[in-house]
Image (tube, rainbow, N blue to C red; front, side):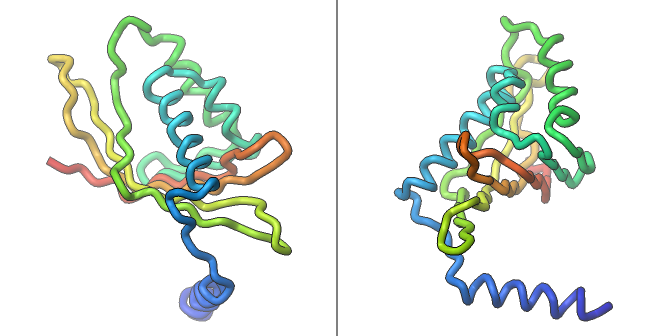
Length: 170
């Protein structure tokens, strides 16, 4: 079993670095496209409470893995609680929480098969702020995220999302 714990990850790492998998520059078309998609996603989730826009950004077989909340399988299952919460939300009330992408934390790594771009890995760090009882935003946790984006005929969609290393900061 030690082979799976140590050798297989080493082989995967060496294969990825040997094939030249590298972060694309921040001024590249791919980086800009996925950064825009990231902004649309989190604006829909935190600012506008818009599960339909969120649904348009996920594959049907979307999977979400969270270090505190566990795993969720399927786009509709993932969005069920969002739809329910958005239905209860007072649109005149300030948003209950905000997501802030930390500057210079976003990285995008293209995925190719036979020289054709089919996907990308997007990684970044974000922090959250929440309203307290006095309706003032207070700093929440900071976390890392990783999105596996897949390109299909309708554009870029997230197939897998990882949300991890949530840390409370004072």
